[in-house]
Length: 125
Image 1 (tube, rainbow, N blue to C red):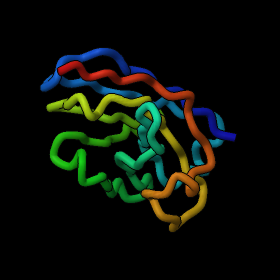
Image 2: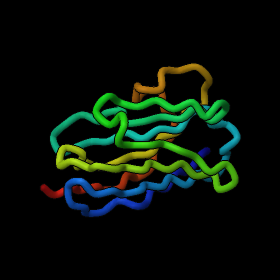
Image 3: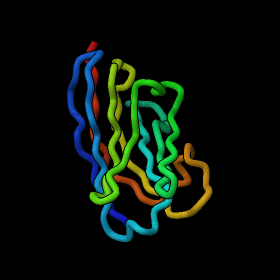
């Protein structure tokens, strides 16, 4: 089992920044990929960013490329999402996810075996 706990959400003005954290515990050695997804009210959950833990390769949705950065702290078993130049359309609940099987599609929610509880990000205009 892997446990994921997100933090760092909040209310920010458009153009501002936030950094989300996702702390992993439990069988963390079994994780291959960690990712962030988001879900706005009344909408589907969408891929935001992912990082392959073996190579540190990163992947981003087109909507956040150039504004968001995913990174990891190996010693702390923590993944971060630095969000800059935030827009009102970035408002959503942000979820951290972990995949324990090699080679699956990083952008598909069904790939991930473990999810955090979510953290709310609200961007005002």
